[in-house]
Structure formats: C-alpha cells, structure tokens
Length: 157
Image (cartoon, rainbow, N blue to C red; front, side, top):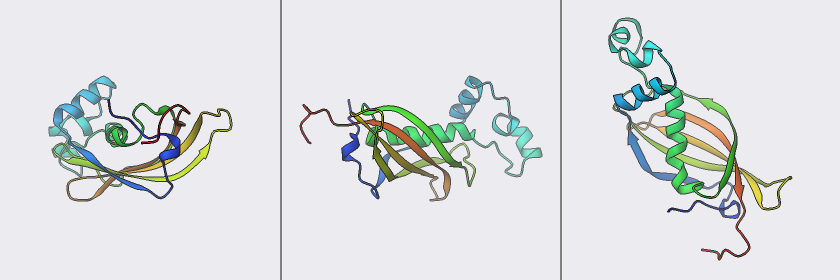
C-alpha cells in the first residue's frame, strides 16, 4: 500500500504535480448523478443540452469533479496518514468539464500548523487545482486536512 506524507513531511510552498489523471466518461457522470439522486438534465440529457444549454452537450456534475480532483491527490499526499478532512472552502469551477475530458491535478501546500487539541497531529492546508487536457483550469479548492504526525518509532524515509 502506498504511504502518504506525515505532517512533518509537508513543506509550505511545495507544489506537487500528480502523476495520476483520468478521462471522465459518460458512465462516470451518469453513475454519480444516479447515486446522488441528481436528475439535472444539464448532466444527464444530451438532447436537452443540445436544445437548451449554452454548452450544447452534458456537463459533468461539479461534485464529481471536486471528488475526482481530491481523489487524484491522495496517493501522493494523505493515503494512510490523514485522520480526517476538516473542510473545504474557496471551491470554484471556472470552466465546465465534459465527458471525454482528461483531468490532471496540481496541489500546493499553503499552510500547516500543529493541532491545538492533539499532540500527535497537525493541520495541513492544500490548494488543489484541476486542469483539463488543454491546460484549462476547471476546478480548484482549499482543503484543510487533519494529519498524523510521524510516530516516534517510525524511521525517517
């Protein structure tokens, strides 16, 4: 299993270009909309979109885009070392994602601090940015994660 970074391993100002990327399929979008009971025709009805929307095609559900953006970052940052997400803010979708778009992500470490309530943890603030295959920014958010500190019996890599 891949290992995420412990609190001490994050350095403010670091930018991580994640190796994983994903091409979003019609099935991804349809399954997400079905699982979340979202019948919005802008996401699921191609003929409606051709007639009624400015994009003339379905746009991918923005919450799927948010989840994908954060999910792509996990292997390089938090897998096995996060306690919990504390929140996300400044969530924006400056451009739509369409079926067939390939999404890649960069993460910047913008802040970190020791936990006030737990001696074995800290809070890391990430700025995630998602881009399509044309390099166009399609989503970004600031995420605050409650991260484990390195156990005292764990050797430094």
